[in-house]
Length: 233
Ligand code: SF4
Image (cartoon, rainbow, N blue to C red; front, side, top):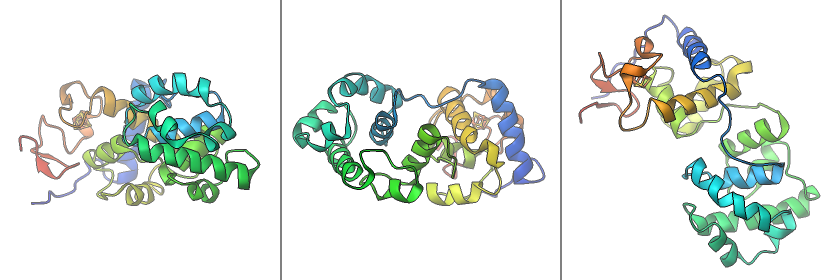
């Protein structure tokens, strides 16, 4: 049975602001954890990070960025060799294809520069709205939306901030709720908390700084609102 959605604070806005404020205190240094030193490296790292841990991406890009330094290096690469070079990354065959194809588009249509609009970025093969948002935010300081990864998805639901299920729908639901100046930080704060405390399988509710606000807390609620299932299911 689907649980009743019930944010503890009177409105979703207040709930969200309180969560952000407390997480800011807890994770003052929250930011992107992928390593990169230019926009091309950022694009590559973010593309590789889909369904893969940032840690593994950083291990791979340490060598990858020495071998491939320009869009031409990716565009002209043998796709099997490129796939091997990112062999420890999830879906490395498809991602090698995306990297090569995106680099070709960047050369042919954008003078070798990573584009700076949502539309142009999402036209690159393998680049969705989430990836594009990260590039805009960290490559160009442009914040056009909220990056909803698996942590943001899970925690936003657990904390009663959204009832939506799909990342795109969650983003649209969050945009009017999260203050615009916090759009970028909302993501980083929830990712930090999702990694440290509110993990997918075994959240440490006793150590959680937003426990008293959380309608999914294992300490006094039966159901994980992220999945809609009882905690001990
Ligand atoms: S109380 Fe538990 S479920 Fe809720 S945010 Fe904290 S760790 Fe996650």
